[in-house]
Image (cartoon, rainbow, N blue to C red; front, side, top):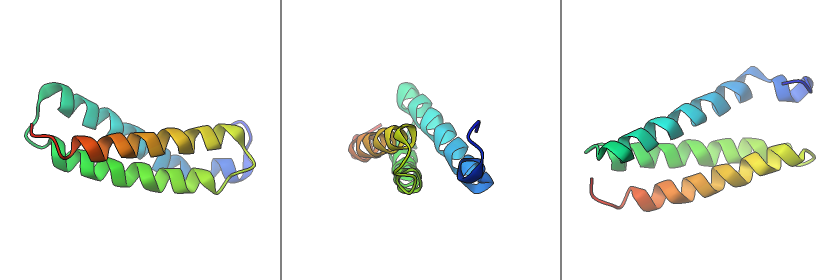
Length: 86
């Protein structure tokens, strides 16, 4: 946020916030053994993939590339979790 410009794009900020919130909800559902965990993980993976793509568009920024890598790793983990029974 301190950089301004393209980093302050409200849709980007909103996407990153939503993705973060979804990851937290997904983790809570996994920890609680929710019957909805699989579907939640599927949505979380999709959101993480989209967030990663948006971060990768800012390839000149190291932090955004780190964010993209974390999002890709999270999406991969979520895809593996969606296959597990609650």
